[in-house]
Length: 309
Image (cartoon, rainbow, N blue to C red; front, side, top):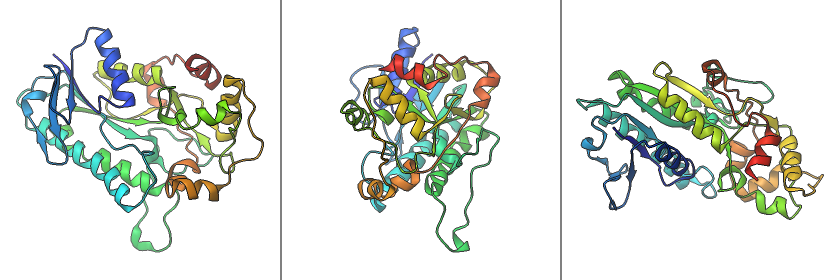
């Protein structure tokens, strides 16, 4: 039986598809264009189109689809796209699974460490409660609150599958390190020119995970029938942005600038994303993965960057 994967053409999905197929596991990719073969199937989360037969009897469903958080400068329209692409797709997957006669054994549904909001220097793990801000209380929501609300709404849409008896895991993913794009994508060209610099104060924590460990952790979660609920996909050693900047410069053998990029410049370039995802600190620990016995290939930043670069 197959593993059905949404978002399979993205950075994480394509890496997971390769890994599973290398192990001989059949994979069916849910895509939003005409299928090119028997290992692909069409779906349209915006229009609510998904053939239940594609999921019937599958071993597992890994749901990774959603518009890129850093896909473009944020505005109201893109906020709606970020929310809709996650909520609508997750609702369609979960309700379809709930109606099946032969349900998959597990639904691994993408989420993000953004659910914890701005943690500052305080470490958090899966036992920590996501921040809730009552919009009627007046004032401005704290930094990172919009992404925390987005992640909570995203995770809540898996409820139909869970209520139908399916094991559901929320993949609360940190910054994934790979040269193929993602977190390092926009930074590498500048760092290679010796123009890398801390962002804002540089004191905000960056929780990261190397792409091979992200894939390995997902495979681990597919295989363990006991684990459900939130799982942080981050390395056990988050670092400040200033430390990350120096480590990336060392890995590339390039100097870094001593003067940080000021917050106002980041806001001008990125819009609200600067305060929601760049200038906030997220010191997120993978407690459940470590309790399960998952052994990180790259638990420390220097060795992860050396291997990746």
